[in-house]
Image 1 (tube, one colour):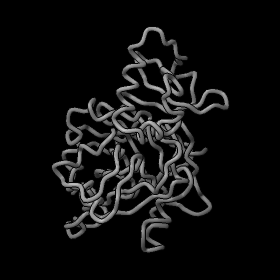
Image 2 (cartoon, rainbow, N blue to C red; image 1 turned 180 degrees about the vertical axis):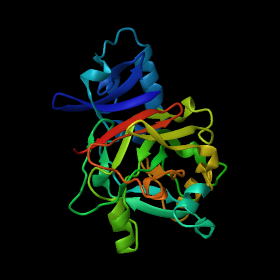
Image 3 (cartoon, rainbow, N blue to C red; image 1 turned 90 degrees about the vertical axis):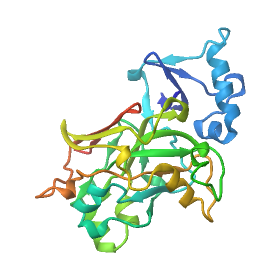
Image 4 (cartoon, rainbow, N blue to C red; image 1 turned 45 degrees about the vertical axis):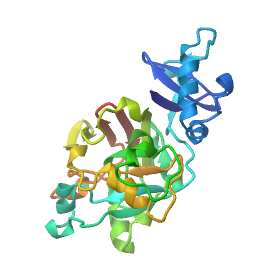
Length: 289
């Protein structure tokens, strides 16, 4: 299923997409009012959604794409977004050299204030940075609480997958000697447009991923190129730390970021960034003009 969170008028709600229409789910047959509430309910939530969609007596509101304002699938996240750094060999090299290829997983986080949805405007932040950069990534959404999860069981803890743009202020990243400030400017974590349940993704470790800036392809790779795969990431994070339903994990970006070009190709006012991942759709956002 392709879940969508969206706004109609001043009302925020969620639903699933079928045949290019968004079917509203909030409140039907006792379904929760937001998608995070559904994820927290566990497997029973998906079973109830399937029941509602098959019930001919139910006539929920439906919308076309142009009738809604897209939101992040999880508009309000409970915890910082967990991110894997340098998880594609070629990206690690373009950011330095072969010596920068990590032997252990590198983890940092982005603040919750960064999250926006498909179609929303990214602030340029010209008053604090001159090096705003894009990073197209596959993101994993955790579906149930887990600690000490083995790699063999890790995918059992996944609710679904989405697209994430880990927008980064490279100059702030360098200036402060760590990632948090450079990764946590307002609006610098577009997510969406869909949260696709794991049963609809045959192999999350074999998905084409592309990033385009103003229709120019900058990144083109496959999730099979990750250094640390999704089960390893989940297992590592869960060692000593409890993962919660709704946690978002960004799995790293491939080569082709703006900083990797000579000269660098940082984002400019008005630039349009599109990230396309096979089976997950296209996440599009434009920088503030």
